[in-house]
Length: 542
Image (cartoon, rainbow, N blue to C red):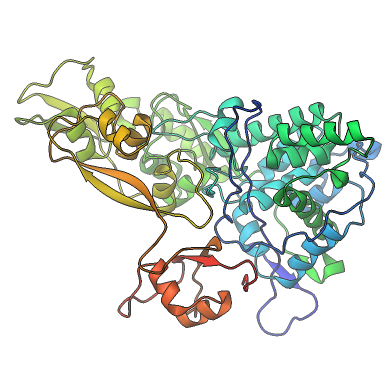
């Protein structure tokens, strides 16, 4: 297990270190028609550092590649952290905003252990991809700032994955999204897309990496507008002189503070247990759809491990239309490939046979089995024909309950950014005679495609009287607690935590904490449970 140990005190439990800072939402480049994306809420397991108080001034750091690093061989290191440090190229900059972020890291020595424990699966791949492009290895720390290296992280700005892509930017950079699969969470594909995006931004801003990083956070249109404005006024056009949103003015210093800490951890009283400088996973072609539990059995590894390495899959199996590949632990790769060759495609999925009864419809059958009309139609070659009573249908069998984080990720749908202080709540609509998906969506002010996805349907599917549909409506009040305000955070309960201790830590009332999470005196919180809170910016951040 990766650990961050304090060198200042070795008495008792080890001090562990640092921080994930709030993730960002990337905006498409199209000018005024571009949708406005609100800054996302803090990703899971994080607390945000103090906001930058003033716009600093200073010289833009040089980011030219050192000649000695251009010949750098990543295989020369046993510890991935040493390899990472050898590829740092940003010059040291003395800016108060960086010092503020670094101070927050020093004061919160319990975060990086969890971050790098998760990162062990993915970081070698990220470092290798960044290095292969000749880019600064500081970018391997960007997923720390974005998502805490949590591929299931999802922000209120609709950003998802290690690199926190919003849907529009994901489409621009070739990230596929279907009912089965979300490329924004795919470790390999999202890393490729993020580095493509950063390289494009680097070129747009004449080789200035700091402007590229800022644009990755707030969008290139915003940064370009401020560059043009400063240039027209005869002012410097480096990052430190631009008038950018507060989130972005803090975002770049967050990455630079992380780099400073990782470059010299001993200077800040920290010691990092090494991460082996070797691949964690192998990418195996499957050639067809495969059930993730069957894949785990073939690989001789756990189902949870397969899910953690393949977070892009929304369901219990890979996408029937591809990508036809799986990431498996490197030690399991040979066994998995060998076993896969002996298992015909027909045996890689479990199916059940359903006999059509009177009045049954495809949408109803799809909902019953947790699949879609399109999947049943394709598998049974229905091509739009009506069902016959007594007809047998082959339906993919859901092989088991998915982990909660997969279910939450799969349930995400495109929604407008929420107003500050607003909270979303689900309601259920019972279909009336004569209603269609289109009329119901129009009545509730939402897109037909959104309503369909929320209910595992296709936009053209029919609905029947009495059918229940999930509708998401906004409300200013939640569980009787009045207007919800403050920054929304998710807290993972630790061993020994109580409702009282958590409420004191985050300076919220016990009544609020219980209300926000639907708790009463009979409910006991448990380690690993996620609690939602709305923390005032001036309150304790834990």
